Image 1 (spheres, rainbow, N blue to C red):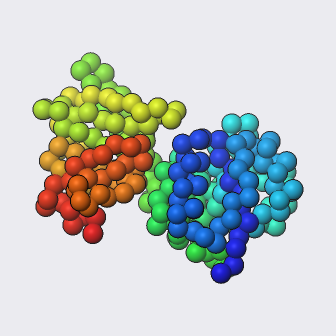
Image 2 (image 1 turned 60 degrees about the vertical axis):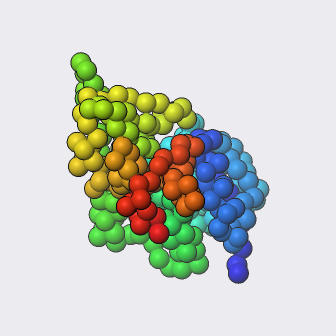
Length: 241
């Protein structure tokens, strides 16, 4: 098996740890040589290590990924972009990225991206771009509170919990776990969120599949990336194999 010397450029500790865990767990062909937490550090380290592959966060603190790539001969290595925002997708495809992964990264999507290494398979066809943009649709969810309506990025939401006629919404913002209480019931949000990859695992819980880390079969619970453990109803166990 060919080994790919790899550098990860990621300024978010939460997503960095998650990606490293995924790579260590299931991708022995990926050899992590260096982790960089800023564009400046990446500019210094990439020429020193001459990687085969770069996992590159698009929205870095001191520059964006495209500013970084413009400062070096990036044709010497493959690039897999990672980001929480689909707005960058068109640019990513225009520079022939090996793949474009939306955070939090899922193991199956990572497997697809890594599987493209060594193959002349770039996402440049306009139909593929349209399909990817549709898949990573980044709508805002309107959350009705008692006196206001808040808007929240759907991809930040980990789960929703029924609280009588209200709904508690759990989400991540700036690495902090937060909650919001909505005056709409869970069924209201189920209709809106199922098309975006959410599943009703219990009469009281709606879960974002992208935030699921593992399914505990003996306890019949799903474990989320943020550590939450959510019960899965007997009739819903088939969703996890």
